[in-house]
Image (tube, rainbow, N blue to C red; front, side, top):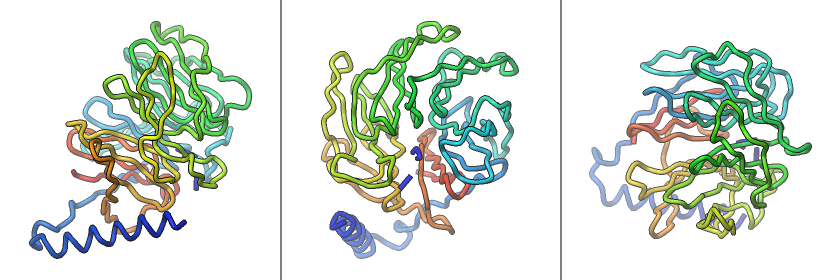
Amino acid sequence: MKTKFFTPILLITFSATALCCQSKKQNQPAEEAQQPETTIISDSIRFCESTYPYQGGILVANFGTEQLNPLNTEGRGYIAYHKDNRTEILIPADGNLSGPKGMFIRDEHLFICDVNKIVVYNLQAPEKAPQVVLLPEGNLFVNDLVAEGNTLYASVTNTGKIFSIDISNPDAVGIPAEWVSIAGPNGLIIENGTMYVASYSADGKTTDNNVIYQITDLSNPVPEKFITTPGQYDGIALSADKKTMYITNWTPAQVCAVDMNTRKITPLDINPEKPLSGPADITVASGTMYIPDLPNSRVIVYPM
C-alpha cells in the first residue's frame, strides 16, 4: 500500500539472491560479511504504514485499529514521533484519521494521506482542527505524497490516478486535479525533476504493469517503465548520494537496492528476528533506513 496489500519471476528473484549471497560468502572475509544490527520500534505502534523524517527523528503513521484494514473509517489513526529511543504521540487519535499513510511537511504543515482524503495539520497549533482535502468519490486508497515547488502530488492506488494540488498557501490547500493515470500508483519520490512511482496492485494480483515507473517531464507527464520486474511495490526512497534507489516489495516481502545507473536490483538482507511481512513506506535519513512492517506493527531500524 502502502495497502500498502499483496512467477517464473519469483524464481528469477530467488536465484539472483542466492547467487549474490553465494558470491559474498566466497569472496568476502567473515568480518566483512556481517550484517548491520537492526533494532525494532514497537512501542506505541499499531499497524504502521508510513514513515517520514522530522526534527532529527521519524514520524510513524498508525491505523490504531484492532484489525488490519487500510480502508477503515474508524477514526483511530494517529501519528507517532520517535527520537532518541523514545516514542511519543504527535497527532493523537482525534477522529480525523482512520488509515493514515504517506506524509509530507511544508511550512510546519503536516499533510497526511487517508481514506478518500488528505488531512492537513498545522504543527504549530496541532490542537486545532485540521484541513480536510477531499478527493473525488471512489478515490479511496490515497497513498503517498511528494511535491515539486508549490505542487503537491498524491497517488491513489485503487483508481490508478495521481492528483496534483496547489499548496502555495498551506493554510488554504487547493482542489485536487487529475494529473496522470498509471497502474496502481503507490510510493512517490521526485529527484532532479523526475518522478519515480512504485506500482502496487490494489487487488493483490501482480501484473506486468506493476513495476517502477519514471516521469521525466512533470509539465507533460508520460509514465515510462524504469524497472521492468513486476512486484507489489510500496515504499521508495533514495540514498544520500542519489546513486541507489531503495524499494519495498510485498511479493516476496523484501527491501531491494536498485543501482540508478545500471538498474540492477539487489535484495537486502534486513535479517530481523521475525521475517518481514509487509514492508511499506520507507524513509532513508542520516545513514539509517526506517522500514514500517505494517502487518507486524513495528518499524525496523536498519543501519546502512
